[in-house]
Image 1 (tube, rainbow, N blue to C red):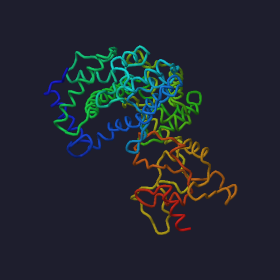
Image 2 (cartoon, rainbow, N blue to C red):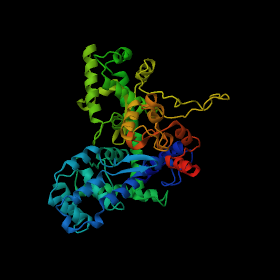
Image 3 (cartoon, helix red, strand yellow):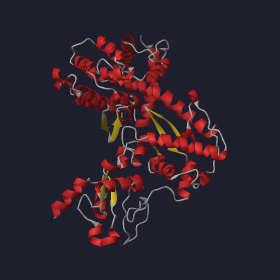
Image 4 (cartoon, rainbow, N blue to C red):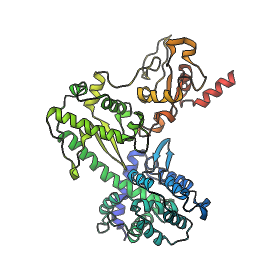
Amino acid sequence: MEIKIEILEKEFSGFKNLVYENDGQPFKSFKTSQFIDDNENYKYSVYQEARENLNNKFWKPEDVGTGKIKKSVESAIKTRVIHNYRMTDNNLVDWRLKDDFSKRANNRAIEQLFFDFYKSKIKDQEAYEQFFSQGLSYQIIAYLFFIKDSNKYLPISQERFDLIFERLGVSDFRTRNNASWENYIEFCSIIKSVHIFLKEKDTSASLLDAHSFLWILGGQQITVRKKENTTKVSRDNSPLPKPNWNSIINNPEITNDYDLSVFQALYSFENHQAYASQIGLILGHKGKTPQSPINLEIGKYAKRIAKHFDIDIAEREKQEWKFWDLFFDGWEDGSFYMWVLKPEIVKVLESCKLTGVEVIPEEIPIEESADLFEGAKKTVTINAYERNPRARSLCIKHWGTICVICGFDFEEIYGEIGKGYIHVHHIVPISQVGNMYQIDPISDLRPVCPNCHAMIHAKIPSLTIEDVKKLINHNA
C-alpha cells in the first residue's frame, strides 16, 4: 500500500515551510536541520544506546533462564540518552508498557525467545507470533524489531500513526487493535514507500527519517488539536471560570502545603511549564513514576475546591475527569503531557510572595541592561530552578554545604552565622539544555561558594567546575 505522490508532494511542501519557520533557513537535509535534530534525531541516539544496553553479542546459551537476558532487554527498552544537552527518555515506548514489561516475571521460555531472535536462530515472523503469544504489546514488539534492524523495522504508536495515515489518504489501513505480523509488515511497507519519496528530496534520508517526517506531520495535526481542546475545556468549560485564587491558595482547609509545593515547583521552570515527572523530581519523589503522587493529590485538591464551592467538576472526553484543568493549561507532547501553570495562579503566588523561589544573598539575578556604578558588586545570574528551596534542599542534603571546587566551608570559618550557607550551581546552563530537560537536583546541581560561582560565570560560555579547579591548581 502506497501513498499518492501528489499527497506526499503537498505534505512535503508544508513540511519545508515548517522547517523554515523554525530554522530560519530552507530545508536541506534531515541531518542538517536544527529543528529536526532537536525534535526527532534523538531516535538515532536511542537506537545506539539500546543496542549497547542489549549487548546481545555477548549472550551465551547458558545465560538462558538466569534472568540476565531479560534484564538486558529491559535495559534496552528503558534507554535514556542525552541528545543536544537534554536528557531524553525512550518515548518510542509508552512508559506504562515499560513498567508492565519490568513487572513481568522472568521465565526460561521468554529468554530463549529473546536469545533465538537476536541471535537470528528463528525467523522474524515466527518470533513476532511468539512474542505476541507471550503477551507482549504491539508497541513493545515493534520496538524489539526496531533495535534488531533499524533498516527494516520501525517503532510504532498505533493511535498516532492511524491518524497520520488517515491524513495521507490511507484510510483503509489501521494498526490499532490489529496487532499481527501482516499488519506490522504493512505498516513498515507504507513508511518505506515514504522513504523512497524522501530520497528524491534528500539522498541521505534514512528509513528512520521517513518515520520522523510522518511523526512531525502528525504533530502538526494532533498537537494543535490537543492545544485547542485543552484551551476550550480549561477556560470555557471550567466549573470555576473566574476562581478567586487568592482566597483558595490562602485557605488551609482547601490548599495544603503539598498543593502549594506543586505550584512552586512548576513556577521554578522556565515559562512555568514542565512534565509532572519533572515536578516530582523537585519534590523528591523517586522511582519509575515520580509523577504518581502529584496526579493523585491534584485530584484530591480539585475535589476539595469543588466541595467547598458546591460545584461539579467538568467531564472530559471518554468520561475522564481532568481535575488538573482547574490549575493548568497544557498539551500532549509526544507520550507525555505538558503542564503550564495558569497565569492567574502565577499572579497570586507572586503577589502573596508564595513562589517558593528564594533570593540568596549575592545570587540575585540582574538585567544585562542594568546600570553598574563604580564600586557596585556584579551579581551572578542564575535560573529560578537553582533558587527553588526544594531543589536546593535535595542538592545540599546529598552533597553537603562545602564548595565542591575549592573546599570552602562557611561554618568552619564563620561559625554559626555561616552554617548552611552555600550557593547552588546548575552544571549545564539552562540556556543550553532547554526548559524541557528533565533536571535532577542531585545529579545536576552542585554546592559552590560565591567566589567559585562568580568565576564559573566570568566567561561566556560559562566555565565548568573542572575548569575552575584547574585554575586553582595552576595558580596555587
